[in-house]
Length: 395
Image (cartoon, rainbow, N blue to C red):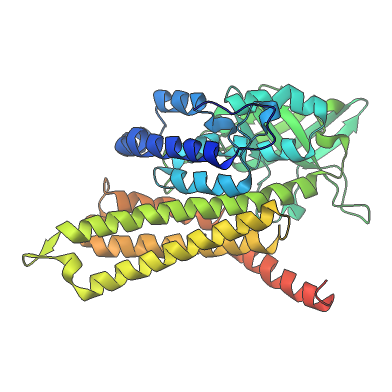
């Protein structure tokens, strides 16, 4: 895949159709056949990583001015639905570059910071990792306990981060830390650019997870890590909380689309199995109760597709960057769990066996209800936001 002219403001429909078609071909022909290998080895093969870099997938959502493809969120969700069709480790490999880590720099970095890092992030030469979550502070960054203390023209960071995606392979950590207690001036949370090889940065062993083999996470400890003042993103101590909230809200629409892609794969596997597997000499797909389960899957997938596309549209037009992302994330990540559960049920005993696609999907998608804000957090954002709007008179 070749990036369009970097001078263009955005990717046109015709160019995007070609990008999407190439991505679908790559996922279906290069990655899907090797899902068992990814699962068994707990890693994405190097040749798949190299091909993803050549296609521009490490920077598809990074602006063209910085070497990316420059896809907007409406286009991003179409890509995410393709990524969700296979092992989620594929998307995880370049997801933080395009999403929650890269978008912090895109939206809040200084020109110097963008010049220093974004081209490497877009090319895949730099793996960026979003270091927000820590013990006691997950879906709500207000509980952050990592600290950053100014010392002359430097900052000294201390803290413990947890479940950090791509930490074992990261070149750059986007680190959130508290500079002061929250007060009337702001949340007191800043965000810093911390090279992975900085003295005092220690990455723990990769986590052993329920699913998503090949998508690596680990703890990251920061002990007296000294970074220059130029590492403070946006040059402001009070950008951190807003950067985290904005990046996470955008990421929720992406994760919702990813869930839809996984649900589509679970549906396709269910239909294929029902059409060929027999019970008493009759294809199980001829049984009405199996057809009813497939009907429920299809209906939920179509509802998810419509919702993520509408949420992405509202993000791009700036009509709604709070309620819609949370609604999409809540519905679609809960939906994919139900569709995956039905897929296992349709497969019967076979669906519980390792090596069967729907068993992998069942385990993998469970995480989608947890990161980028749990389902419970999404409900609070949606419900609280609607009530507050009503109390303001709908303004």
